[in-house]
Length: 414
Image (cartoon, rainbow, N blue to C red; front, side):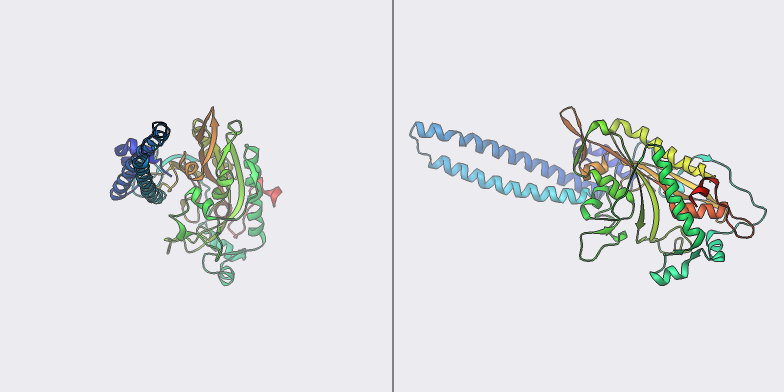
């Protein structure tokens, strides 16, 4: 959640930053007015409380001097009633303020370029060489359907569209990739966790999925539970409403989970293949850091995901997302896009974001700095989306007869 006090202190600068991220000026002005009203009412309430306390201390003097306490009591009762009324007004205003603020995205960092959509993202670096073929390379769904390892019709029969059933070598490689990614991250200092694949509403609020993105979540009927859209949700919220020992920071975490998304708003996009499924596997990295550590850890996470792709022999590019493509919780994001020769284009396979204190403010994740409790920074990144990595291997390691060569680093996992 954005810092309301920052909005109050410097509305123009904060509003300008949020406008870069597409927040409507009308919403910001409403937020400002309610914030100022709540601040004024709270000050008035504190003044009334101070006056009430001051008069209460007069009882002793009135009794000692044998004065009539009835007018004093009446005055105090009037102040008490006024205070109760102001308390209710402040509560209503602050609830409204919180409700609006929960739907406001994070402030973009100054380094984030302006832009309206993914077309305005900036390519920072190309890593590795694209493979060359003496024949026209096939797309992964053609390869998978030909050898029967990707069974889309049975996936639809079992569930609905955007589901797949894998068999044989594809199923084995999916499992091999998960194990390889977890081992890769663990060797770089990320502690492995096994976490629930469902989360309650408070957990999803903590990382920003609720209330804004409820339409993209699968809800468990009759329960305060949702299928998780990413392990970021549960890994970050392991420390929800906790004061972390400063000596433990940075906390580096990794986990495998399936992820579940309705893909609301993506009708007609990537309807074939594994790129955009309702259920997919992902290995995630999450970091919880002191503010001074987060930039260094952000670079470490980008490097980790990039080196993972390099170890698999997959050409990829680093891309700085513009304001129009930046996620709701992110202050800055680097995407890694892998080369898919069958599609003849780069496609996103990892997204690494620094959310600064945005999620920590919502989830109340703090550390002790001297006598003060300070909000941590949180970071997250795919390492990697497993299904998309399988796609990349199938398309980059395909042979003319349709068979797939297993990358060397995966052979022992197969």
